[in-house]
Image 1 (cartoon, rainbow, N blue to C red):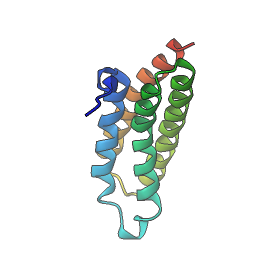
Image 2 (cartoon, rainbow, N blue to C red):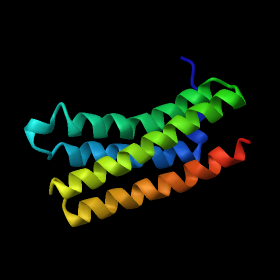
Image 3 (spheres, rainbow, N blue to C red):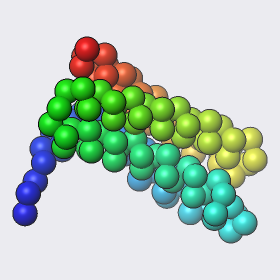
Image 4 (cartoon, one colour):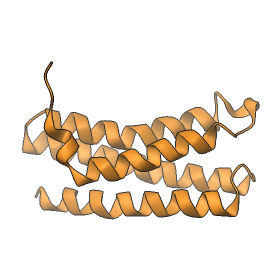
Length: 118
């Protein structure tokens, strides 16, 4: 089995945590949202970690930067979707604050990694 060492990336670690938290939180969303907000939020949060992994696995600096940009864009998408879910009262104050803090931490590390690739 081939193992890529993406797991050594702090950005991946930071992306993995909010993705898991968003899956936990979105399980509580109304069933009417399963193909809408729930699906979109889950996809965007997973996309952050998955794009970091895919870009790293390409073993090419230019492609890695490209995938990091996509990961960052997905993180911004997740930010809006979390705010939207909160406005619809699908998230408690505490859940929103926790997920927003995790997303922020991920964003800072991801942004630094992206900038270091130039």
